[in-house]
Image (cartoon, one colour):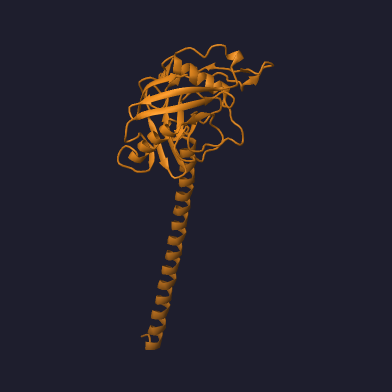
Length: 278
């Protein structure tokens, strides 16, 4: 028969083993929590990157994103400057088979695109009128395309399908006749950006997919200083009256009751008429 001393020693050893097992289990739990937390943090970083790039959800792609139409053109060379100061633009056909593209031809005389002056555009929506100024010197090919599509009535009676409301990322995205986020014309062209391209409040910039040379008809209007990589062509500015309209739409939040986020605007916006003025 074991003595009292031996029984106490056995009990102490048993207790020690229990404490060691518990300590090991607690260590494993902490390690697993750390792994999960790391995975979540990585996922958040990826999600933010996709949000800025506009690539997730498969529609807008960029502003970013994607906010722009899907599909890659056969080729789209960067614009080159001619001896007379005009610019040679390439509007390449989109042969992706995207069913949401609308054929309205291409801008005329792309080999001699004006690269000076501005183009005033009036954007009449059911929420108010926005005065837009396109800058040919800043983005001659984008300004020529935007002007051409405006004159063709491409933007008339079309919805602004996407609203992003964040402290450093605030845009209303328009320019897709289908309202799906993947529509546009049957051509694409190269981006006109520099390393110093920024997107302060009041900027008009062209959306694109995550691939280069995929600028089309979709554009976004910034109502806050928006942090984006210099990948989206800045084509002009919005006037103060237009900014007031954007602020009103932004204050309505995202469809579904969210004050901030990315989705369809809770206050629907339809471009009733887009016209070159002056």
